[in-house]
Length: 177
Image (tube, one colour):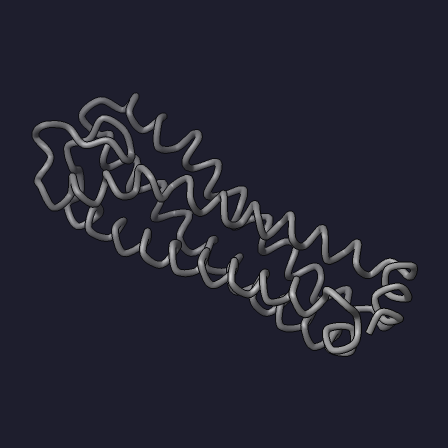
């Protein structure tokens, strides 16, 4: 079996940052912004705006690493029982996470369109928040948990994929084909 250290590192580090950053922002940044008083919206927007380019690099690294892993393991995908199904599941989860991340960013831009929207936290509008911004914040309140759930599922499936690479699993899965 060939080594794919660079693609594996890009895959894992990118996914780790994507998962961890969005989880940290949901757990810490959004609620902590609520402590900023009248500047809550500005603080939450600033935090997410600083995270966005890092997240984009992380996602890009993950995607490049994923393609590298798929190319490096194409023989196993074709010949080892269960690997094609696992790869399909990873692709679907990645597509879902990308879609939710992109949609969340578009909602974030709506919230960010006003420098300091009235807000109780990064995702909790007040009764004074403009309707369009409040609707975006309410959607973001749910979606901030969907991204870590999807990327966390990707971490789990990636762990399963690593287990499929054990010599005993390769032999067993290839023999079944």
